[in-house]
Length: 231
Image (tube, rainbow, N blue to C red; front, side):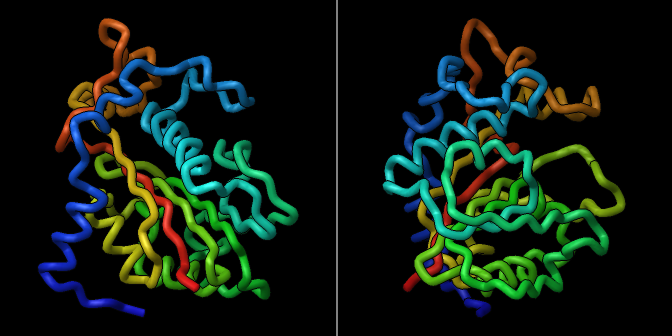
């Protein structure tokens, strides 16, 4: 599937999913450290993954999902796996250029009701082809979740091809046939300056100012999405 988008459709996606209220940017600025009760600790982790994980937990509750029959994941260390339950899981680690390449993904199982792949799209030279392959491996009514940098320092070069804006991530998913369920994003100037000045990714301790970590409008550094394959 490869949809063409009218100007009206693009504006509709923007208004529904991307144009957030001021409250959105403030909801986790006072970081609820007490919620981190799993083994994936926040210290030493790229901070946007923390906001992403908090929203992932929030969305599971909001949409009354969290237990799946068959899960496909590209990384066994993704913290989101700790917040779901499943009967079966299959790992297809993505390690460019050849191992389980999403550009040619064709597994014998094509009925996964949840697919998880984080921090991968920037390493795909043809994201649409790869997401289309994942669509073909998703059961009708199944969900897919991913996060991706919008702005990042080069890493895993030469297999670092792109970044993705929140709007771009929405259109990519809908182009492949998925329906957007939720979209989130985070970023601020301190983070963007830090990664380019140090060549590394800060955790929350480097970004906290007077007890808060701001999420600044139009300063997106990473985004994430929960999407669904319609029945």
